[in-house]
Image (cartoon, rainbow over all chains, first blue to last red; front, side, top):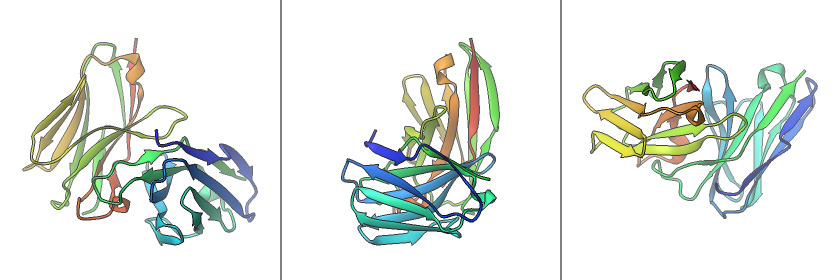
Length: 114
Length: 114
């Protein structure tokens, strides 16, 4: 894989608290993505980044923010966690941003909001 | 028009049998159709992909069949093995669009019984 590490792997948090998930890559890929995976919904894009400090919204961005201060790190923040944000979160990278570029995924963070 | 519809949601096959997963799309601008394989506790990984200028692509026991006129494509797994048990996602994208526009089906959970 593309050397993608997500942390933490598991987290339980309470409603209303802020949560930050981290994605770290060692492949120097320019493009990075955050997806959430839910039963019956498949993979849905939350936010993506096309370079340091360059980010944009995906399909399900409400309640989430991201930051990318270095090529290798992409952070996803739930500003005030809600139970609907209980999900498995995947970070992905790609070397180019074209529609034909394969995505390389990390192994996910399972987040439970109680 | 941006959806990719995948069926079935789940599939149980006996060892040695053929597994078939189907996907359909509406947007005729899609020109790249990858399949991702996801094992439990892991992130999805690119398995095989096809472009619409060919009707079939084979890699080992995995074959994508593509029907451009019907706007359908399918994954066939020949001689299915217990190690193939995973969730499979079809997807579609446009080369001219960014990889953030990759559209995923909702996934098929394949179980291959020994």
